[in-house]
Length: 155
Length: 291
Image 1 (cartoon, rainbow over the protein chains, first blue to last red):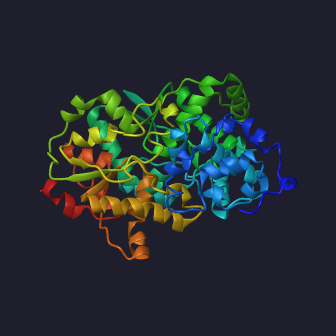
Image 2 (image 1 turned 90 degrees about the vertical axis):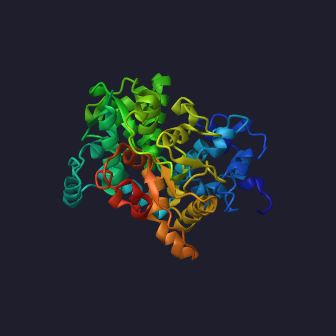
Image 3 (image 1 turned 30 degrees about the vertical axis):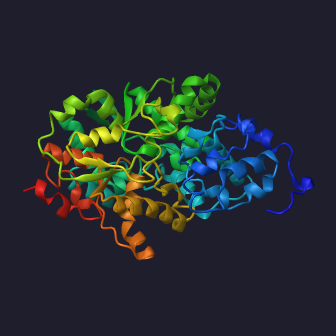
């Protein structure tokens, strides 16, 4: 990373994270790096480093985080969060950052299509008549092939 | 012992072997699983895009279970975790529950906040109990050497699962598998993630996470992997062939659901347990138990 330009930082970024559920304890991070040492993704891909992301957030490097590819590499496994000696909910903060990235217009296409399917169909793998035929053949009960309630839930 | 059965999305469409074997095992042990056709996605896959929407979906499912006055039994670890997390948050925070209920009122639903969510394996251990399970096992599987994959959301975040097992040294599945007589072996990275949630982001990274574990399990000399989540099964069973061809390696490592393994020991036949639907063939490994 290049030198930090303070004019491009957002001094309110960490506060914005702190004010959302899961982000409350971000200030408690004392940079011990237990999170990075515990991370199965960091172990094989060095562009992903949870301790670094928390530090960047505290420095207000909002755009560098939200426009990055790396925040999407968190697999949501909670290894870091379970071990954080300061009780920082690191995995939940990664989820918050992804949500904030999307609100800012950055979203991997795979995540977008998953969201569109669920909000439209109520499930990631919608059930069709063919699925129900296969289920019947295996002796399993049929499932609904459409879902009206999600459309109302997200209207 | 009656539960609302939460199947989720992946199991009924892609992991019917899990569904079949879980229903058989439940029936054998006297666990009544009530089918709930109105359940929608648990919300987990929406979390990274829209946490509020994910919570709303989870809360809607909880409200349906509450209407029937039933606690929830889920087979998928991510469904268990997403629903348990929402139940946990909404039971502690009246303000948050009121906000969610405002949204649920659009579909005439309301969640009061006292539904318990349990993974099927946890119910086996805590509510059925080892002794009762053992009394239903008729075949000795002591010839099998098993590597257990706990995955992540079966145990974590531990606060929403009432810390029921030790996340740093989990043993609940070892105990259940051990009842069949099968030998459970340790291997490096036993607690690690399968990489599944990275599939919609970067397939190659997801595959390299899975490969780490397949390498370690093979090296440790296991006959098969045993797991409790359909996402993990997609990575290790469904994608094993493609990982083999991407990396020029060969595993040929069968992947069994815990319910299939218990079902074999209970004496069910191959088809009843959906073993014919496992992608990596299990026939040679389990032949001796079906003769």
